[in-house]
Image 1 (cartoon, rainbow, N blue to C red):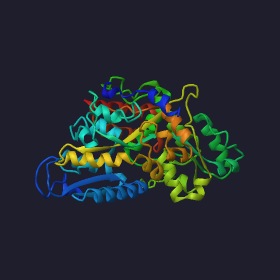
Image 2 (cartoon, rainbow, N blue to C red):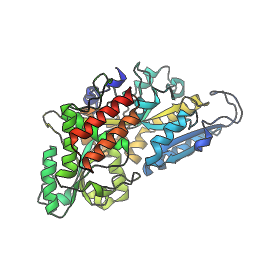
Image 3 (tube, rainbow, N blue to C red):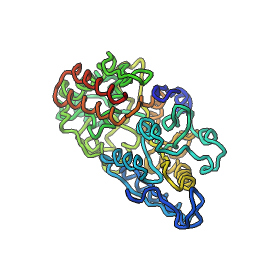
Image 4 (cartoon, helix red, strand yellow):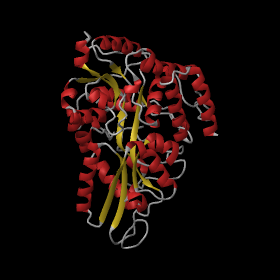
Length: 437
């Protein structure tokens, strides 16, 4: 599949799921010398992730377990604030430094890391397998596409695989005389319900999160998937920000965020460590959510969590539902001197898929994951599984960080400054053309 035509509908997923050391450490080495996997002394691995408290807790437990069972391995674990994560990680790897092991989203992998040869292909030996195909055979078909290049080479395995859903505050709905068992099915109904919620005193009925360019891009593609828009042409060679479908997506964002008046986008929480704080605190009534978000709210605000329900994502056209999927993948720095040892540790992390689901609400799409005991105990898992059925990986192109920055600027100007959508998208189209060359 051409990389920049990554609009694959995960129909196979549908059939399967619904049915059923600091910056200077720079790629750790071995005290005993030796090269790639040949060290006979202490093996030092460095591992960087973004910040998500439940994930950090489990990572620390798994590192301790691995070091106990592999006394020759020492793992330096570092977390990076979410607002700095993308830039710091890419900069460090681009200069030949950075950690041995990263955990990165599929947009960044396909848009920056893989094209720039910053990552090592998966080493089957690290997993005790004979081929990458054998590794992939343990996962739901199509779910590893987020970590492949145009030739199908695999560069990582998923730490989390997310479908997109919608959360409503049932108490707020009752306050407004709305029936929580009949959540909004369309964005038009989100606006109508939002106005009712406003009248009941819930002034932040629905909001997007304005955290960093990656979040902007994901919201934009969530809407564009439904309106028939895209950031790039199908072949990924030219911008498509002036297409009717893309304009419809931006107009929908502006209406939901500003012109409908159902919330003030300037009041949206900007804490990237706890991105759903407004929903968790009971301030916001409706939000686009992912499985991990609900786990975070359950732990931080259990009283509010009890008032929430997870329902299908509203649609532009309910007759043709489209959702969005994305994943984070564990991968190995191509400059690492300990690639084989790094893949062995990743194999251990990946083998704990049930704990990732029970402790962090991270779905790892191994075959028959939905039949596991943690899955059966996970609230709203049927809604999430259905979202996978309608999901697409995001479109990704060259120099994607720059493109995402362009999308952020366009949204900010249309939503916060009130500039006409046609004007901001025309300028964005020109900027994206310069970025992709």
